Image 1 (cartoon, helix red, strand yellow):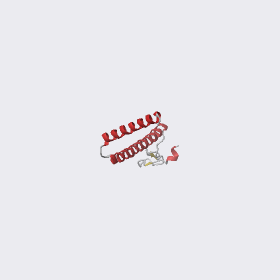
Image 2 (cartoon, rainbow, N blue to C red; image 1 turned 180 degrees about the vertical axis):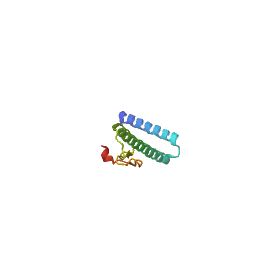
Image 3 (cartoon, rainbow, N blue to C red; image 1 turned 60 degrees about the vertical axis):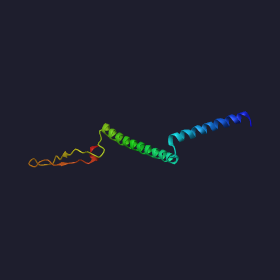
Image 4 (cartoon, rainbow, N blue to C red; image 1 turned 45 degrees about the vertical axis):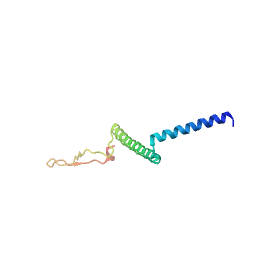
Length: 101
């Protein structure tokens, strides 16, 4: 066995021993629980990221429609009809969204 092989083998065994000691110190006898906790954390992080992205898309849509001056669901302000007689009160009828353009 050459000195180069012995050195690399020694370094690898020291790295393995340090990793095992670190894992034993952090997780103790609950080695199997560690993988479940890691997976649960990743799932939770994914759900949080998805929720933030959805909220960002909804917010961007709202802001962009406000900036452009268009209501996202048509007009919400009723417009009085001009054909109402003077003796009757004016009735409010919403305009279709297509006529607002």
